[in-house]
Amino acid sequence: MAIWHPFTQMREYEPLVIEEGKGAWLKDIQGRWYLDGVSSLWVNVHGHRNPYIDKAIKGQLKKIAHTTLLGLGNIPAIELAENLIAISPKGLKKVFYSDSGSEACEIALKIAFQYWQQCKKPQKRKQKFIHLDLSYHGDTFGAVSVGGIELFHNIYSPFLFKTISTPPPYCYRCPFNKTGKICGKECLSKLEKIIKKNHKEVAGLIMEPLIQGAGGMIIHPPGYLKEVRRLTRRYNILLIVDEVATGFGRTGTMFACEREGVSPDIMAVAKGLSSGYLPLAATLTTDKIYKAFLGTYDEKKTFFHGHTYTGNPLACSAALANLSIFKKQKTLEKLKTKISWLKKLVSPFASLEHVGEVRQCGFMVGIELVKDKETKEEYPWQEKIGIKVCLKAREKDIIIRPLGNVIVIMPPLSIKKWELEKLICGVYESIKEK
Ligand SMILES: *Cc1c(COP(=O)(O)O)cnc(C)c1O
Image (tube, rainbow, N blue to C red):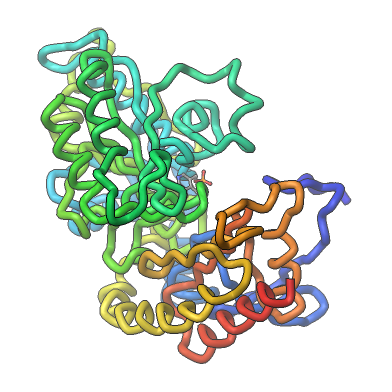
């Protein structure tokens, strides 16, 4: 076999080769169909082989597949930027394209850093970033620097830039050992302390809004994001929200920020942007930030970043069709009912012997498995409990992928009721049998 798979221990890899898809289903080369329980890694929105998106790509193919965005425009990229601005939180006015969530986050960091170097009243000391522990913003060096997942990130520590990390509001395993009733919001007072002490040197704060995905589907308590916005505004720190996982309906609204009425200074999107069709990402910023990059060429204020495929017309046409389906088929309205079905379906999980907590934010579910429910003792990661449950699910025609000891359920938004029932029941049985 010539392939080296990403985030995969190849010695233990159990081959499964997908040949075809339809709606929420995937078919392997043996002809067996599986439910796509994690939307092909959190990207698929309207189902595989969606007729509208297929048609849009074919239509664009008749015109042109690729042309560079370095100094040239193309029609799908222009239209998509306008469409994105129209649905994004207030104040975001410019779209910078890229190809992956990691890159969208790196761009956000570079823009934030460069902004303070060359804005109207430069603050050259603002060079640091604050991020949350257990955060995930991608796997390239810049994104890893602001990441907080030990298993993925520790090995690279000699290469990473210094950051300031703050404990996340992971209430089930509160970093301050508090429980719901006597919370006291110490994670926020800690963050405020950090900000007060360092703000003159901090360019930006980067976070996943409402829910930290790869860290284990850690759901923030209501009001957390809003409070972070208040603090960052007060201390003149740019707020970067990473909506790579949460964007495009995942949490029930188009973007997670909307739920707390928050407008960030910079927003990164990717995954659901093209409904899982082609690699595409974007970093959105305010006019104020954009203007700091304007000047004559010799002022060297240009944003010198951009990859070969930035703003690819095929990818942008897929994304345009993706957005139009949201309108045409009232996706977000229908999603409300589906979210409540999902809630009902996952509620019995909590009584299973090894389920510590069931977490749901819109159409994102994380089920944290524990060795001992009373003490919340974790399964040692070497036990691979998550991987075992997912392999069990595969026997029941379900494809899911765990995050350590957390089982993730994140089907396409277009999944039908009976499919959702089959998916959840299958996962339930798989946990029970393990
Ligand atoms: C997946 C993810 C990324 C990285 O996106 P890639 O397209 O895999 O590079 C960044 N941030 C969050 C929140 C993600 O879930």
